Length: 294
Ligand SMILES: [Zn+2]
Image (cartoon, rainbow, N blue to C red):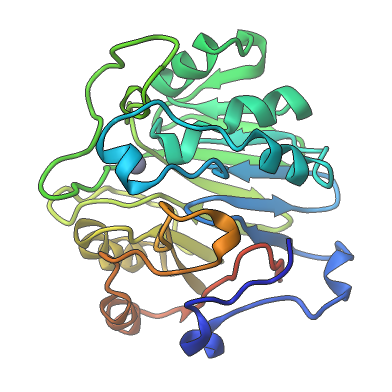
């Protein structure tokens, strides 16, 4: 898939990307590729970490009606052709847009799945072996090749006042979109390639979390909802990031091939104002266009 810029044009000055075609060379630092929603591929010469991969996008209607999900297994397989080597997959929580494609990718690559107890239960129920999973909780610290991953507790934002799909799954293995439940939300600090990268998928201003991990080189912070945007400023104020990357702000109910479009609920000017109150450079990444953090 080539670069796509739909919806991001007016923020072009904020977009970071490696010059093409030199992007293929892995050098110093960490190469970061945005795959949409809250999904990122982090690569150094020796270690590859994938976070919250999500290709099988479900429409808003299917999601609202809690239908059975439709897997985009061909799209995942197509991406996997160029990404055979993945050491670990980190999962922030169990919702479909963070976990659903993880089993297919884990089977194809042998990557270790690092996730909460609930998310691990979901993937093991669809046949992933316990040998390939690691249950983590806030305070866990895990070494994956030359990367160290620190786990923090997180909060899931409310959509129209409630955390969606936040009860135990009604069916295991999951049948409906709503069976992919939140579980215990997590945030991660990843130390690799001499850099410190923080990621969460959102939060709540009324339930601040303590991170104690400043300074970081890059803070990837979810802004999918008003709740999450409220927590965004608190999060970056704690992290003192060099770069601030708002995440989960694209319309993940539309197929990936249709390009980047902001979520209707994402108030990007508000995100910009919150970032401006803090130190750190606000940046954006476009789909599938790598940028090397140095
Ligand atoms: Zn979620």
